[in-house]
Length: 406
Image (cartoon, rainbow, N blue to C red; front, side):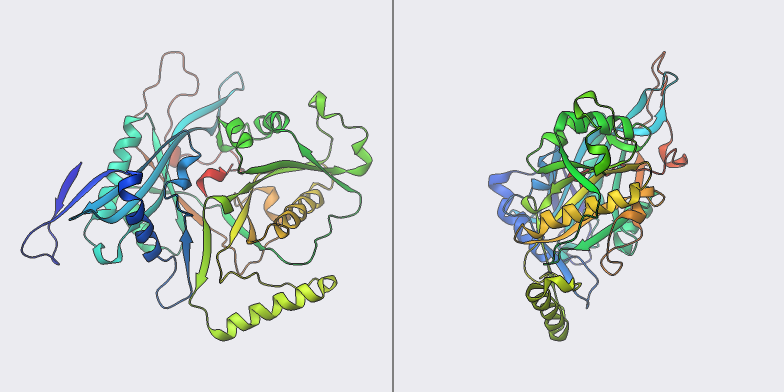
């Protein structure tokens, strides 16, 4: 696939850019260099850089149906890159028999264009070519996520690529401290085997949006560090996991290790800020019993644990969820280089208020935009039928955030 763009920067000859699938042997070095040059953040302020750990396609490698496209200019110069994946997820509707309805959905992520080749239409073409691939592989919708403050990205997708604002989940970030976080008296935390976790998730997220049909593959993935359930200790002896019957009160979540896929690093902070952050860590390490709210060393490469599948039910469920989050924090504190525990949930999801986080590091609205790629045909006898997802009100306050999309 190739195209030409008339560029003011090149008045003599047109800029020829070829968009094609990523070839690891040919493109790896060029993509890594491009990623290093593309910092995340506003110009003149502290920024964040991403290290893909020598695997540029790693962010979508764990998806069954995936692709990575590169934009190449001249003598094999990589000037742009984009990634995409397709999965089957719940759309929040139910058939007459109560069975959840599913939709084939594409996710766009990792769009980067070299700073020296922007404003030439390369990003638009990358999105268009990726959409073609998504349509050819049966996706009815595609969506993307960005910060509400990322005006260039929002303008690209909404003004140029006809995406519409869809959902605004909250991204909640809890720094990993040196001190241990107590779980709460009377609370027991139990590790749940994948087959039982799958059964629980398919039940509790049946009415949610974006719950993946292949949840079993996620739970069995090596990046999933486990699924854990918190219940009152007084109910522990009464609960038999083999029956599949859950206690009256419980909270559940799973932990995904993104540290093995990518690592982050903050750059551009002042010396005073650096010194204050370092001082807080020293005090926390020397006197952990004081529970000083220290700031991890975000100025070296660090990873995060992502919490997904968060759900709670029954009396005192909020306390149980807080205990689970503390348990996940303590897991992360024993993993060298893990700087934060992150969760993303719907604005009105009840679990939101139970998840510990720092407002300074979190953002209340993570903007998701969606686009209908093709007119879906309803088959005779099909109860779910196609829908204009972006026009419909969410049927549930719960959004299942797939850890593979982070």
